[in-house]
Image 1 (cartoon, rainbow, N blue to C red):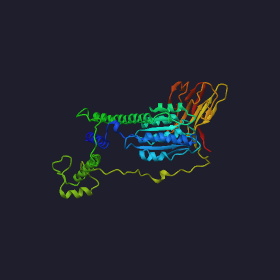
Image 2 (image 1 turned 90 degrees about the vertical axis):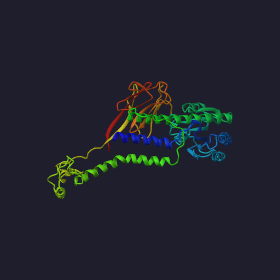
Image 3 (image 1 turned 45 degrees about the horizontal axis):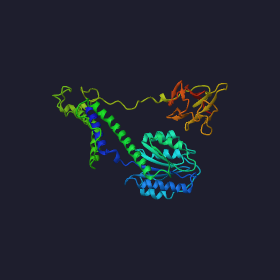
Image 4 (image 1 turned 60 degrees about the vertical axis):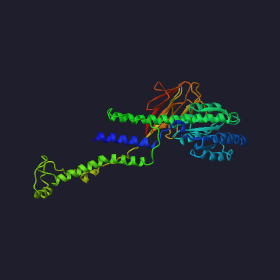
Length: 441
């Protein structure tokens, strides 16, 4: 019975998924396009107007009905048109952009755009590539874009362009860097955006197929190889009435074991009061009609097979069990220990230095000033070598694509969860991660 109910439940869930999730060709998926424009004062009014004109040419040439959004970023990312907007809305909004702010939060803007595209999309980025004061890094942006199937198509604008940063963003997200916006034609830009849309749609479709294959495999295992295989993907649109019908069927399947349990319990209660044929059931002692009342009133004897009295739900203890015994003398207040995560820096010829790690920010180590928490003039360190990042109540050591690499306990790592006593080595610099207990107050 349990195996039958499980197989029925899995089959119902798969039917619901196949019915309410139309799977169509990748080219037909409405993949959103977000235009992200740098509106910081590093761009002149003329440069921003020219940028808006280029973006407008691309937007109006998108296929009809394509979802389009617009983000402007300077001191902070600002959604002018949400990702599910229309080309006409974005076209109007582009003409109203003007320089503002004092900084350029490029990485934060891209991170916000990728987070708003959980089902894939393309970011058409137009900027000088310079980031100022962002709380996120290029690695953070690339990781989220990979998870959400987002690709960046980048154009450069302005007098001082960081082309290396733009090429890196495009490369890490499988997008494209097309050079300066005033030299790339609208046809070239539109072609790159459309190619990125198709690639994103294909990635999303592949991820959905992979998820379905896992469920198919579970169903095949549960049925021990019997029956026909469930098709992994079906191209169709479900009728409107199928979803509520399948929801009702799923609820019925889930409720069946509970209803059966209550029904069996009711049958047992009926047997106990004499409604069963006592003479033909060997599990019970024959009782006359007059003896049924006596049997129910009796607390000393129960016939074989009659329900047992239920045990009380709570354990009843004498109230004295909770009382504290009196004692003599004074006892100091119990000390409360505070768990502190620290990084101990060990340099040759210098005493160890201890740095307390914060649970809401990363601790970065490297040679470059201003961008690291700990800056060291050590030639074997990279400008940004590694960081220790808080994660799920602990900390993780992350190598920042350094030249000499980062080692934890002698093993080269990309990212490694740290335990107390682990040794981190970066070039000639060695640090030890420790958890220290100290009394509060």
